[in-house]
Length: 180
Image (cartoon, rainbow, N blue to C red; front, side, top):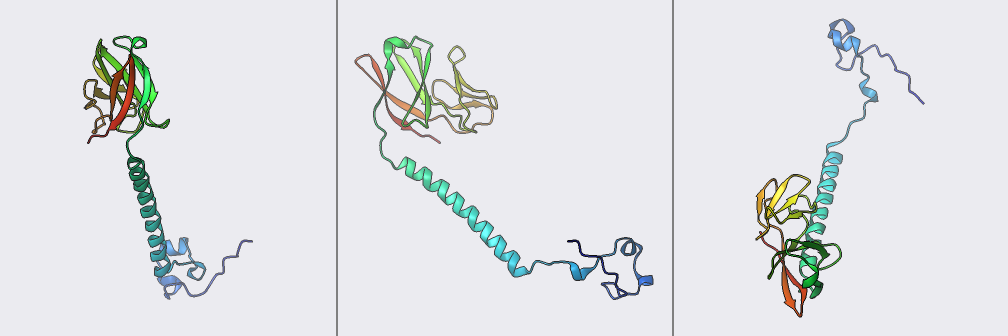
């Protein structure tokens, strides 16, 4: 239900209608109908909102710490050496199914593996063995294929290195090296 506007004979500032500025006559406001937020309520709102942001940031940090504190990741088989051609690459997940990685065979006896998430916004990086780089298609970031360090674009941190071990013709992932 809409409240009717009540015309009062005395304007809110106490001056007569003739003394009022023209804009006030064109836009009359009944201050008795205005609702004000008390300073105490505003401060309470700011405090609760800030607390929610702090709790959110603490939970994100705790998740990252717990994820890193899980101990050494298990050794996982990636694939057979014979199945990966020189200049070829295969994708795998390590240490769990949420972490995509890529294994690149750069020479007959050289294998490199990195986390496949761009360190800028977590887009999947793609290897370009001929140019010796990983390319992030989202923002054109480029990483050096030999060490995972950023070469161009917005990424500032290097890709995580997946440590490898080759035994009996099979490539194994043995750990993750996070760098800054």
